[in-house]
Length: 233
Image (cartoon, rainbow, N blue to C red; front, side, top):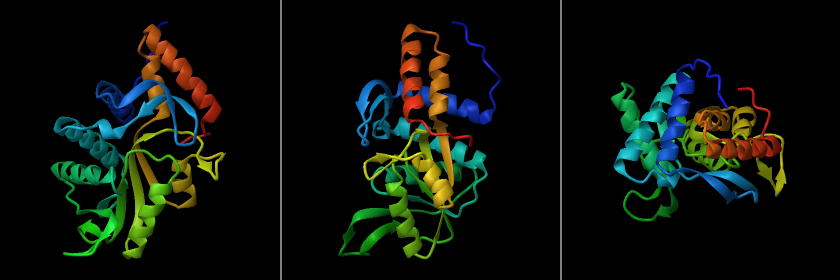
């Protein structure tokens, strides 16, 4: 099958480069995986496998490029424990390297009862806060971060994630017609920036031109048709 490749803009190219990077790093895998919602997904994205210095540096570069290109205004970044901690730190370094030096902070799961105490580490939370996380499955981590940020008197302004799965979230064990990203954007009133979406993953697979690529594309497309949301953003 010959795929008619359309010209890509900067965001599309960045997304395709990121998907390739995630595949090469073993972070994005294809097969059969059970999600937290109990669904059998034909792909699995495990950001914990960005597990060495070179991968984290490259990942931070993708985040920074996507964030800066989004035009989202923010005064600092926040990393929710635990995966968000190294993400916030490395993204803050990459943002500074690109001319936007902002403070960063993160939280502990358990409050420290000695030293400086409390659950927050890093710069004081203030102004418009950008939350850095890997993916959003149900929006639970985002809601927890929002509560922490508001309690400190700051504004939870936006969320940056690596991959938007563009699939229905679950509430009380039931599928709902919106994704976690849509919930955060539309119900909580926050901006969301994703390096790549499920649609970008499908395009990547479509352009592989191999039997394996076509098989994975068919399975991922079928999954999206069953669990996907109407996302025109």
